[in-house]
Image (tube, rainbow, N blue to C red):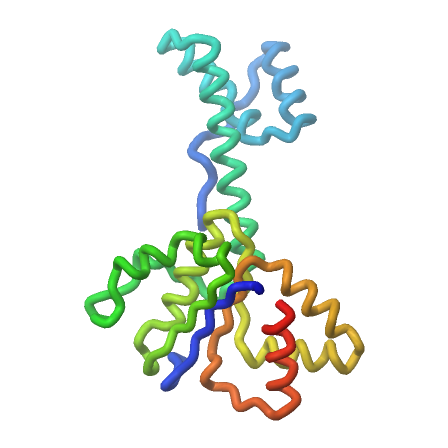
Length: 218
């Protein structure tokens, strides 16, 4: 079963950068031009962007060939991790950026930093456990929802944010056009589904059945 974070109410509250470095203009050295072209063909953008200044640093610090190669590989890996995080955050479709580091625990004494810190780990998602956030309007439920989900996405898992009403409407439209199973299958591929504004929704019988059907099959 796909894990979900559900936000429900007693009323609900109504630029990452690249890996540090700079692209230096290539001198007339034919080896630099060949390296640049090889990096382009091998799709190593960070390697291509940084090899000249890292080579200069390695020469200045008298680094070994292995250390120079390791530095280049680490730059490429860091860049790929960053781009993967950015892609996962775009696919999550959060309505606004919220981070757990900005959450004001002093205004929410019933929420402890220790519990929230545990939820940043993807373990509970991989185990298929759901999470329900319940509280009065203005207590920070949506902030926690987006913040926790952002942290999960940054570990490499796929996340999708939607309101409960939007999901039910999508399921109803899919059912009417006989695409319900394909829509459920698409959502089932997501590691963590975030349902906001659950308490606002007054479901009719059909909507409740569709939502139950999705949660049961997912």
